[in-house]
Length: 181
Image (tube, rainbow, N blue to C red; front, side):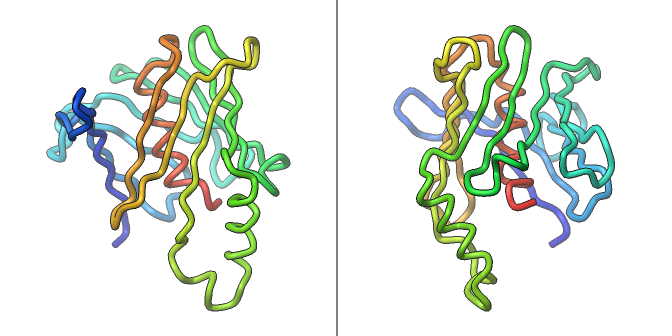
């Protein structure tokens, strides 16, 4: 009840679930957000992690680290732009990207839903997707699509080879874990 668990699963060429790439568990209500990804649920070997730069600072960025603790990227929610449509910055070696909710109408309906008494307490029935584009070229670098499922499931497509899968995975988990903040 006090932690979100995440399994990163590869997709086989036929669309079925492939092998487990990483496992993570996020503590809820932490003062400084940090999520560590392991090879499996035994948590014996670290694959990568992300960590907030500051405590309880909504404008703070999050650094993504490899298994040895070296920074490999970062991301940050853009709160001003996110008032109507959630927006993020994502950066890694050789690229800077901006991400927004794909559907502006769903973004606005989600915000209204949260303010309606009682209704706002019902789990969100809206499916939302994010697209990240390279600032320099305008080309897509990453897409995150939430799937219809009892459990939260996302399909992550990395369109640009400069985007490390660990940075893409950290951004995806952040969209799930931090989006409502």
